Image 1 (tube, rainbow, N blue to C red):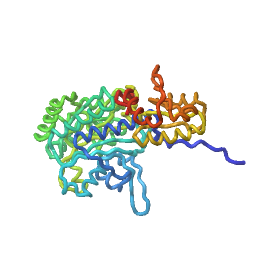
Image 2 (tube, one colour; image 1 turned 45 degrees about the horizontal axis):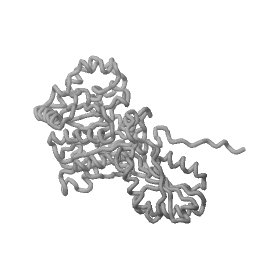
Image 3 (cartoon, one colour; image 1 turned 135 degrees about the horizontal axis):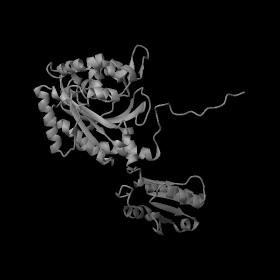
Image 4 (tube, rainbow, N blue to C red; image 1 turned 45 degrees about the vertical axis):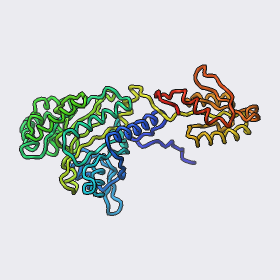
Amino acid sequence: MKPEKTTLRAVEGTKDIFGVEMNRFQRIMKTAAAIFGRYGYSAIATPTFEHTALFARGIGEATDIVEKEMYTFTPGSDTITLRPEGTAGVVRAYLQHNMHREQGFVKLWYAGPMFRRERPQKGRQRQFHQIGVEAIGASNAILDAETIRMALDFFDGVGVTGVVTKINTIGCMKPECRPAFREKLRAAIAPRLGELCKTCQGRFERNILRIIDCKNPECQKVRATLPRCDEHLCDECNTHHAAVQEALTAFGVPFEVNPYIVRGLDYYNKTVFEFSHPALGAQDAIGGGGRYDGLVEELGGPVTPAVGFAIGVERTLIAMEALNCCACGTVLHAYGVAVDEDCRKALAGLVIRLRHAGYNVDMDYESRSMKAQMRTADRRGAVLTLILGSDELAAGQVTVRDMREGGGQERIAIADAIDRLGIMCQARETPCGGSAS
């Protein structure tokens, strides 16, 4: 007896993106390319997997990502990891290809899948997508503020309104700055360590700053009594923090200073920030970033300041859906409807010529009834239908129907179809309000 066949499904923590969601996904990518390019960023693509040591050194061995969430493999003598984030790979490329010697200051942006072994939930997948930027080689606070302004321009571009910007500073590694604050924090937490969740008790020795941004209500009660990082800064970090706020105000960016933002990666210093949106619920972060002036040096390069951010694509999609943002898929300028097989053959030639002229055109291939073909044209949002019957074929003509309510139709010469299609499509608006052609 043959075993019963089971239906294969996507692996838990992964998902398929198609239809309206894919249209929104594509809008995100197109908007990122346009907005980031406007700010002088060039695109970069790095491998999906890297040597594990890159993430251990770059992100930090005591982080949740490195300790618990990475997908690591050992093929032969190599140990490789599917990338859990994008910054370390970009900095590795910056050094490997001598950008620090040949270009100095660079602005790079990336997009692609990331991988973390997490418990799947709303907006959190084991394979997820990020878009991010890295500005490497300058320490000016204006650059921190510019990256935040650019991220908000991106959210505006995809229609995600209501994003809240929160900023903080976590100081630098001068003895009188973050190291001194850590000791104050340790002294304040030690007597109340038993009140913290198990995760934060483990962080006490390994990564004490992460206790500050824990979402556990009991930990937050303790947090309210703790010293604040922004009140224990060196003069340089104080000046930088003030300059970031001044630039944000000048750029018209509404923001709130939140002393409990620390970010989860060891490479951050000075400015850190997060973007949140209420559509995401309790886990409302939609993106974030900050300054990482020590990462290039940690990975073997010279002392090089840098700042960047990453935005979660899946989380942005959730916000877009909640706000009913336009999907902005590819406009189907025309759909071909043929009465019989001879007409279908002739129509196919016209469809090819229209595609070569730059129009998005499709047709029926299944020999269905005219009624079924018209339903498909309507369902797919075609601007026009091109109807070819035996009378039209004999006369060298095609009937063009405007799919708007009450749009009407007319017969035109097949030879004039390309020019006429352009005129009619320009008279119609796409779902985003732009020209259909």
